[in-house]
Amino acid sequence: MKVVVDMNKCQDHGQCVFAAPDVFSMDDSGHLAYVSDPDDALRDEVEEAADVCPLQAIRLEG
Amino acid sequence: MNARIVVAGASMAGLRAAEQLRAAGWTGAITLVGDEPHMPYNRPPLSKEVLAGKAPFESLAFRPRASVADAEWRLGTRVVAARLAENIVEFDDGEALSYDGLVVATGMRPRRLRCPGPLAGRHTVRTIDDAQGLRQALTRPGARVVVVGGGFIGCEVAATAVALGAREVTVVDPLPLPMVGPLGELLARALLKRHEERGVRFALGTGVTGFTGDDHVTGVALGDGTVLPADVVVESVGSVANTEWLDGNGLDLSDGVLADEHLRVGGRPDVVAVGDVARFPNARYDGVPRRVEHWCIPTDTAKHAAKTLVAALTGTGHDLSPFAPLPTFWSDQHDFRLQSFGAPVLGKEDVRVLEGDLDGDVVVGYHAGGRLAGVVALGGQAAAAPASRYRAELLKQPALTA
Image 1 (cartoon, rainbow over the protein chains, first blue to last red):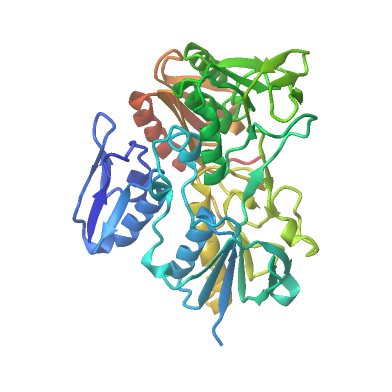
Image 2 (image 1 turned 45 degrees about the horizontal axis):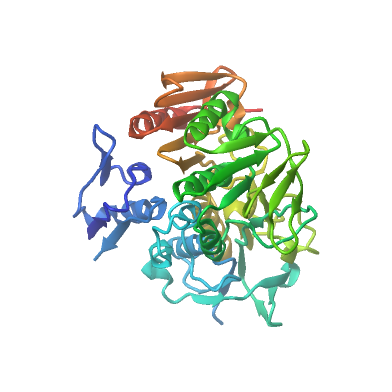
């Protein structure tokens, strides 16, 4: 599973961090950081993170 | 015979419901029925990026999960009636369809002002077609804009209109401050100041009595006797639930459709409600059923309602805890963002600045019974980060009883 975030769309709402804290996080300045190739066991979490992104900036591949 | 769930409504709530039905194990047919001709799309950009011309439709459309690739979409079709006792819904083209399960996801439509005067030049912002029509009007040079209603949409549209170079932008509201309902007086006053500094005018504490002009709006007449010149009027005065199709089934439709703590409708195991049309009790708070028009609610309700419905239809038992979402909303206006977690509206009598100050980045806490009920951050990035810290604290709070 590959996670792709369109950083041109991302506005750092942080909803994905609440949905999938193992994959998404906020750095000290409040900007998004994420793991691009998380374990497949986290698929549900990542799907939920993609659902709750207000900008629909998160995509799953594979 | 293939069992079928009909999802009445094909916007975000309908799509999320279909996806969550699959996630909950539903393998039967799913039919989504929606009156707009478009596939489901994201609405928050309508009052901002779409109006500003920065987001084409393709960037708004949701990407449905692969699990609903076999769902049947009936777009441009309205559900006009339901006979719940017979498990039948009827469409505007005369067809009737029987179902095993029904998801009520028909959402809201904008409330309109009932005042004398011409209709041309008056806009609402609910659909992509609305927003594109309004954009055309706003981008005419020298537009004078009157926004009726100082809530979320009104404040966002006013900010976007200023950015587009409108000659005058005035927000009219019968309340004394913009967004005072959800925010309370302290923060609403800070919001007013920020809008005024960026060129938005306000006519507060007065309502609209009519519109001037023959074929097209030329002005907005107010209760205090003034007439604001206007080429473009935006009505953002709340919304009306699309529930007429459920009439005649003995349901409580007094404000949306009443649902129980598992989002079941009318005590039926085979009908659930999702999205902003659903009026449900939140076990996190006082148990009073309310409709919630926040962006997160379609997704939150879909997840819970789909489990409820699939468990009932497949006889797999039901051990869900009552629905208890943590409310969250945000609003982008000018160069600042409002970000809210919890239920500030329940703590408007006891408001304290938690971090920062009201002229800069600020986080405000709303307390009920001495306990934190909600937080709202106003400002830039520096305000949003601490707000999410308080979210964790709100999740730990015990249920708030009336």
